[in-house]
Image (cartoon, rainbow, N blue to C red; front, side, top):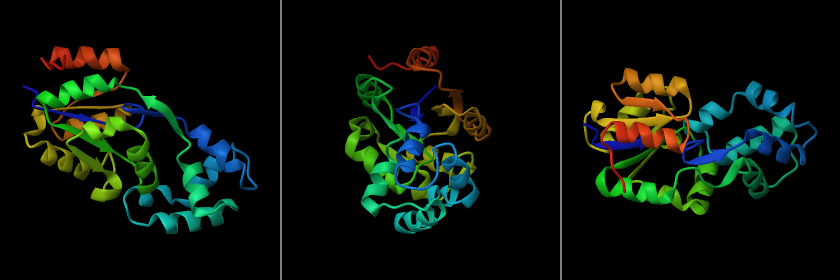
Amino acid sequence: MIRAILLDLGNVLVGFDFARGYRALAEVCRHSPEEIPQIISACGLVPPYERGEISSEDFFVRLSQALGLHASFQQFCDLWTSIFLPGPLLPEGMLIGLRRRYPLVLVSNTNDIHYRMIEASYSAVRHFDAHILSYRVGAAKPSGKIYQEAVRAAGCRPEECFFTDDVEAYVEAARKKGLDAVQFQGTAELERELRRRGVEWD
């Protein structure tokens, strides 16, 4: 029996498109939108930033050096968060209904700059009982630690937790930790998966 609902953030609760961010960053540096993801990957700053190992200010300084950015910290924050699309992907009424019946836990690989913007701009995240965020717990999916933290926050056994994520590798990692996990394929499919397990929210 499912006793808690665990949801990913990006492309489950809130949509995002990295290309939007690359185009925005290209306006304030010497590189094209096509070059920027390669440079960001090569400098290796995003994984430790998402695990909370470096501060937002240090991340800004070091990424600015790598890209040759000409922007203030606040301008950078606006550019870095431009990847997010307006409005939630899941109906807010569904989240409200689920929370009335089950602990609702957000489980996300994210970072301080992104999540501060998410909290300020998307009311959907306020419906969660717990926010298990990679930069706060010091571990990112598919690390087992982040799933353990999510199960602890849910207050029940792993097999009593339903989890969905758009990344199949993260779903598989959750299953290895005993969670009932499925890949997110859209709201309609999620509703079918929940109803199949006897989960109600209406």
